[in-house]
Image 1 (cartoon, rainbow, N blue to C red):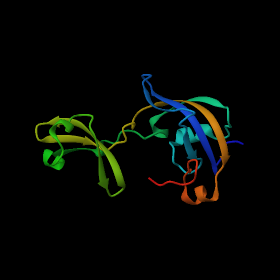
Image 2: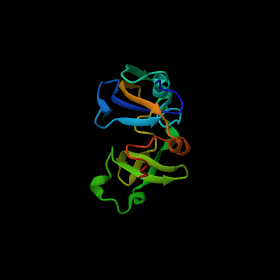
Image 3: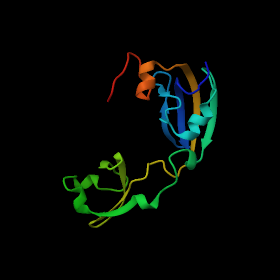
Image 4: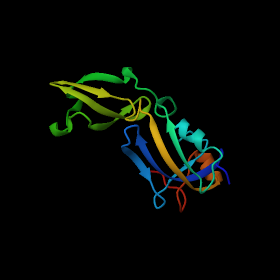
Length: 163
């Protein structure tokens, strides 16, 4: 069976940046499983997987525009240290990630600079602006179940578990 809309694909992959550093990976014991056509993965990878089948391997390099987008400077802002009231001092450092409730739901923000009582935060996806390289092996392709189609995402073995 080929990967197409309304199929569920299981993948093993290694994701690296252009410097060759591994950013993420999934193996056959803990595969990445997704519903194709549900926009749950980045467009560049979803497009590259169209028509592939179990056993296929591919290497694909995806520009930021087809991944997590370009860096948006409007998502960078300076906020007073008081915004981090209750956060321990050693956690208020560049690179620290926090989850913030925004109008668009949960968002990850990263501290990019600390200058006295002024903290610069970055609301961009951590991989925004990066070219990504995937080395993918398609492990399995199957038809999505009615539940998966109505929920808009793949369900793991043994049924449905919301986290």
